[in-house]
Image 1: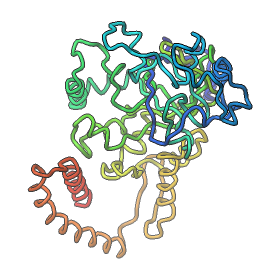
Image 2 (image 1 turned 45 degrees about the horizontal axis):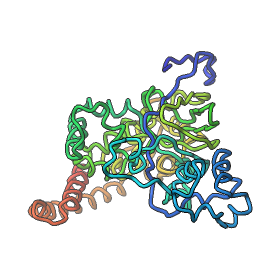
Image 3 (image 1 turned 30 degrees about the vertical axis):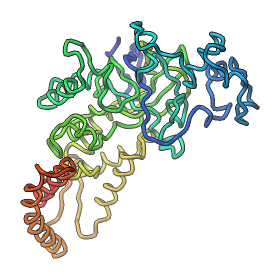
Image 4 (image 1 turned 180 degrees about the vertical axis):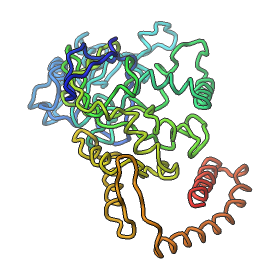
Length: 411
């Protein structure tokens, strides 16, 4: 694996051997819960390999687009030829019967979430499941595939207390404690692909990776912003001390890519970087700038508390490859707030934003916050009293933690 990288002329072009990522795990994991399957693709949207498998089953463009299945689709498993059985498994329409007494791991792999190969297409991401993804019927641009890297898992495992949360999660799942790299078989961040070879600080917005054998091309669109389920799944602290906040702020939560050209991805495949246009804006830098340097209460609600210069914020917004969802849109909101606030005189320097002294409007705003502080201070003892007895303990703990965070933010 090559991770060394040399830049020339400062334009993102390079002459050294390109860095690579190696695929370690693939998962048939939906990014949401909108129902769909391969039939939602038109014939022209299928990759050449998918068309070949459909032809084996007796499909042509007319049959496929008009959803007129050939006779093979209604056949029993034993009636199919080996080629038809392979095509059925590829589309995940039919599988061989699994004998619970069979100790052959290869025969049982179809019952697991982990896969040996997956097909990805533009604007849809992973295809071939009995249920498709939220970004199929209501596509969210730039979120075709969610990828996580081995190096981020290792970094979390080596950082207290987050490593303890991960290890305890594996204990709760009865994972063999002597097994190396538990996350290859038991991922905890909802990813569809786990890769190895580069740290998140080496992967940048706009980077394009390619698999020459299948033609698949993907482009890095944004880091991933973790949701509260990450804290819940790992049984970590909530709020500013949780694994959700830390992984998002440090760029360890994975990243989304858009599929530029469809193709197949297999376990062990090598993704070679062929474009590197924005070396400054790696996943760690952009994550820290937007969600790691401001107030914790802002980051927990996915709001940007920008602490760098406005010029750098403009530079970030200008990246055409940066996804709108959770990144460019909040960055634009932060920019508009900083530049259009009539009650704040903003002057920019190369490193910070200087604000004028507060006027009467700001004083009134702080008075409102003080009143809220008094109200919430009366609510807290009640929340603490019922926290241990509540049937919805998680919800009460979550509310209590965010109440404390809000009070801390306005003190």
